[in-house]
Length: 394
Image (tube, rainbow, N blue to C red; front, top):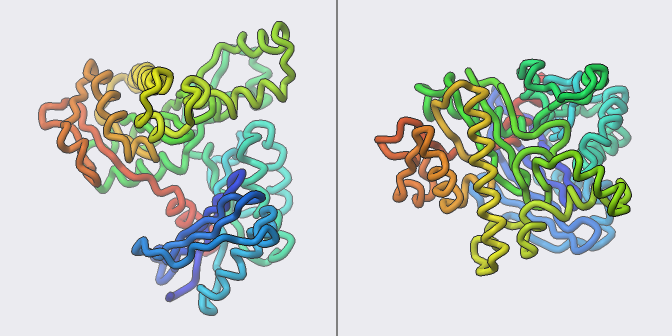
């Protein structure tokens, strides 16, 4: 490995994903990636090199992965052997929420960390886990530059009108507004479009980030104009276990008439709803597509229906549509979902080519007759984080 190294960390509720990229003469190149999963239960460490070849795959002892601090120590020891004495230039972290203040990546010190911890109620399933390794590294390596990259930051280009709720204005001023999420993914796709489709990259684009967490974003000239997620990552499309758009009166009813506590409601909306709640089978689209359960079919139908509705809303926000892009786990790997979304989007000029859609690795999957070109662009949030980190620590 040559040059210095940038490390990217993405800490979740039960996993710690990482990438190490060589930083040589201003260029970043992936060296290896991996994860520690099953934290606190049955932990496993796996890693692959830049060619996708397995270089590590083993179970860890409970002591090695009892919590995030233990995982971080296990990873640090592994990295010391792999980095072969190369300098660790900085660590970039995915942080879901940056609030109103952080519209771009930022070097993290204890004051910044305290501000980000105050945003935990806005992203309770993600923010605490994102911040845990930052805090641990501040304690162990206060000299090591750390950079927080926010899923909300990309959407700060939206007009105030797009952020507003129909609530008393003082609540908007207090920070209750539409933030939008998955911004690191949308930032990557917006950049990549300039390479794969420069003729449309600056025009009116809708990107569908379809995964366990799902959202859609309207781009104009590469900037976010509107998005389906709002104040939290619950809004918009139904997701693996999250409900998506919901009449706020349902929450009032559940608390007042069904006697549910706020903690119960939070668990319901974040962990028991979405594809899992509707199907009663799974939160994994792959399992739903293989299932013969009528409710699994219903969950898929609902997912596609909501994508179609949200697409119409975003096209209206843009005043037209010049391209549609699929990305993330489902968007990149499910020809069936793409085909059904394309059928619902025929009214706006979308026509997907069945053969291209079924071809793994195809970038443009629309027919020549389609007035709206359709693309599949695998996302790479980690590369965006690494680029921002290198820029800030340089």
